[in-house]
Image (tube, rainbow, N blue to C red; front, side):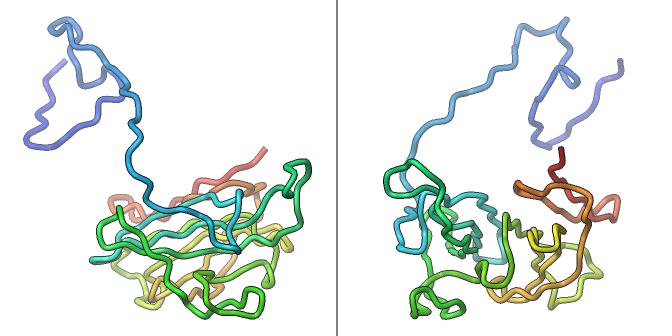
Length: 201
């Protein structure tokens, strides 16, 4: 096998493809994660034990975080609640220290003092995944896109935003799937195609 010149690129070794095992005693080792500082707590009244499906993107000098917020279980942890899922937003300058701006987009118990960008008053939501669209042909008004499951139509939809906070419903992506997970989409620069990874069973 001819050597592959890595130059000054950093490579993550998932397997032995780039390693000549006959000439080294090095072995692959998965290191254990280390607990560090808490970066954000989900203790707002509109959040709960169902805060999940976080997606983070870097947009210029700002990191944008999107996540589901809802109370899954009742106070006795014996049954599921009927709490509505909300899509919330946080931002950071360094990816470590996060703030939840009051956006006044969605009312929660009569007040807009929250970081909710939309909720199940629109339709039955199951997930939300946002990404920065790096397609050079992308309309600037659609530069941040999100996959969102519409549980009423049972379809995965594309939403879009220019500022990363106010999203507009765009178009259906597909109805071939269950979508009950974080459905991840990207723009692949080399293949010049959008890819979406979805759940089905």
